[in-house]
Length: 407
Image (cartoon, rainbow, N blue to C red; front, side):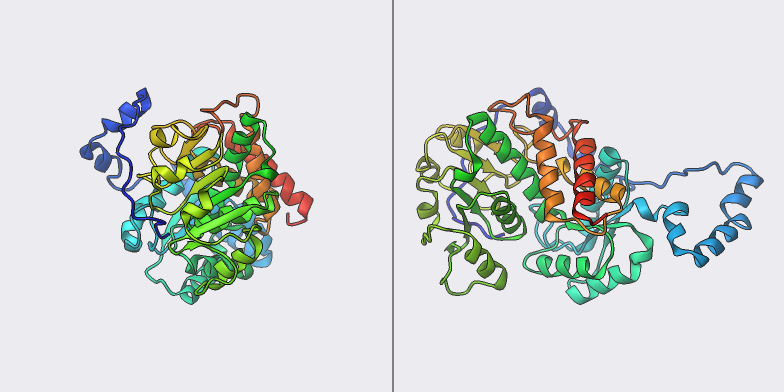
């Protein structure tokens, strides 16, 4: 995603909680030791200690299971791990804040994602990094590998290719597919905004929202907010406000312009933020302090770029009522791990053929529901480590899948 402005980041020193101080004390040696040999391993689900065990797990016993599956392919779900296996797929073109670093360098991130699936949802997951950026090749690869997995988590694929790839993979496969950079982010943003609005006693439908960034996450966040009944959403890219009639818009931005910005404003970030209620930072850029100061009273700022937010939380807090970031050393961390493990678990539990918009909204509502009775200015969303989240999300997503007839 392109920066909205080239103004420098604020440089105030963040407060150090116990967890933050612990994070700050991590050394390079510890980091590399934690990744030595990778972060994943395969564990056996049945004993393999005796000759009898070997005969059951492999030849000759396994032949009976293979014959049964050959006669009835549906038995694959019962007698292999396919039904509960998520593949984390990337071409390494948009990794974290690192950009296009290629498939091999992206692998530690994909391993980490797979580890989170196991930890928070109990799902088996394997990373699959592809040495191609061609959408046709990526789609065809997943089509050919379809017998090996039960769901696809697309990850760290650059925009605008990510939109086409996700759409085509969804069309080609009969299983849950989600590009987490888009929809995981959008789900958690919606949950956090519901929390912020509830703390303030505000109706979300009346909020004026500015989304900074028209890449994967920015477009998905704009879409889910519009779907949730917030009509006044204005999107910024590197050239200013995305609006109808502006030259040079690609198809994705042109479509978004037609469905957003109901007041028809044009111009720069300054024009968008004047009097706005909510700022969502998804641009990896920076926003000058004076623009945040121009927002409406009791405004809300989600500065989510990592590791450097669009505006330092301490600076934003001088002008707005609620601040959230993507960082773990400040309150209100907006982290995709709140969404994707439960979303995929719920989809697989229900046997869903796809992940719908209704399932995503249900996930956001479930995340919000976990802390609905605990809300505060510094707790608009659960902690990423809250063990209540993934089960609640999975149950809500499965119920939505059944209600929508995709299970």
